[in-house]
Image (cartoon, rainbow, N blue to C red):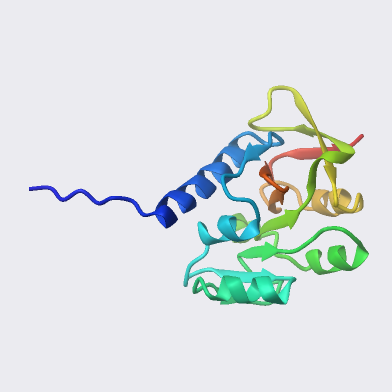
Length: 179
């Protein structure tokens, strides 16, 4: 006889967060609603004892460590949770792994707070986008985009911009132009 397992509220919450992240990457530049706001629910659905994380905020780093994830320096972390708001943030992000030609999957994934729908306009193109898409994003230093463009695909970062109640994915294969 088969035993049915009833999902817990945590199971459902993590499933909702994971689904939002997957839709965000498959539909670059299209905001995906978050059932629970903030970076922590997104982190909790991805990190475990086998992943390394860097958090710019010490309190957030402690919350990540409570999940079992291993803290790491920014240059070797699998997941980086840091703002992209100013030159100091960008200096830190410049050290984040973009992978290497033999192992591009060793690139880090960046999660950054942003104001989705407000701020400078971006034009996105690439896989998952019919033609081009436009997206306004605030809270990201405009100098981040040329920094990101220095890594040619398949190298580079997958990026999640996290707003108050939504997340936007920008895979490393997406070209971004500030307009």
